[in-house]
Length: 129
Image (cartoon, rainbow, N blue to C red; front, side, top):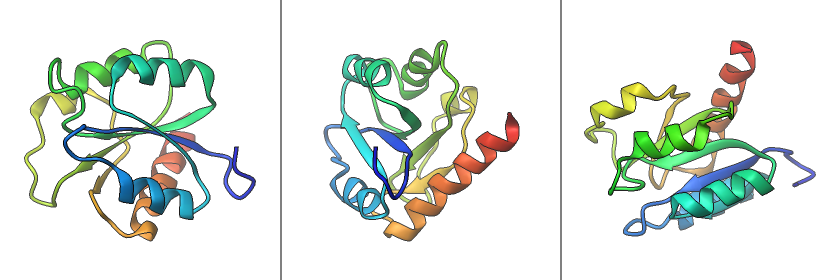
């Protein structure tokens, strides 16, 4: 874990749109960041690392759908989820309404915007408990 910020973020990326800038931005803000593009690896990481929050591309796991993947990952777990969208006018799949969402962030946002989204999600999650 990072001494500046004890939160670890798991980013679920779509292979077609790597999360290089998001990862760098969040690491620059002091977060520990894990990245995967498969559901199987995400399960492994959640079982072996102290993940505080999931940040998922809305197009993660196009085979079964992002919402199904998130529901699978959250089974027996309680943590906030933020979705990465490609633009402010992105179409949000209706299936995402089935997942408890703690916010959205636009791809390639500046570090302070991503960090604020994470901080807000963590605070909402804490208040919900």
